[in-house]
Length: 255
Image (cartoon, rainbow, N blue to C red; front, side):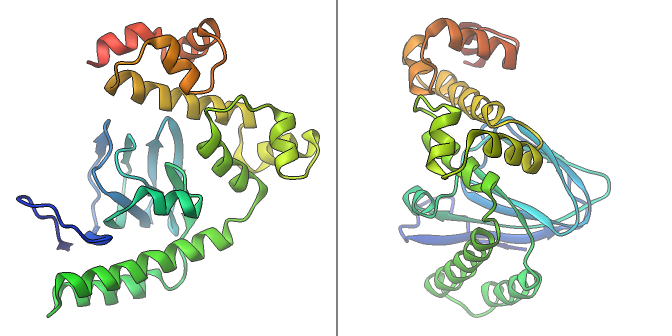
């Protein structure tokens, strides 16, 4: 394993590779407030059950997920062998790439080889600057591969929902954005994702609202508007359906 986490000072570089390693016997991870660095994690043996930003799914051998810093997540599995890397990078760069809070991917054939090369470099006679440069090249190549191979309609729609959840989006708006009719949008998305477009949009909005309620002080009515709900009553109804508590109860219990 390699670690570049400095406890006593900030590292002021555009990119820093903070950890790189494997867990042959991955222990359960539960981070309700997320991790403070961005993370790639992928499965080498076995399978794991993941929950990220309110969505649950299973990853098997050859599958992985990217998570932004501070996105709530947990994962566990039996047996479960993972590899990972974590890093710092401006959120604006991820916004430019169109990457939301998390991104599932199929592991590229070269990833284990390039990870081993980066590990050897990081643990060898390298400097912070050279490790940052090598890590940046590694991460940007991985993003480029993932994004170029994940050009399905549902992936592009999901990225849009992650970026524009606060807007009053309708199925007609979304279909028009991707130059398809509403029937094709709904059928294709449900086939590829297993849930409807509006189910995913609601999940994203609720996940955002939970974070704002927990860490912010804005009035509940304003939180609902910020997260795309056009009326306080509708916000309260959907939040209670998803969370089992009213927004006010959730805020009180989360503090």
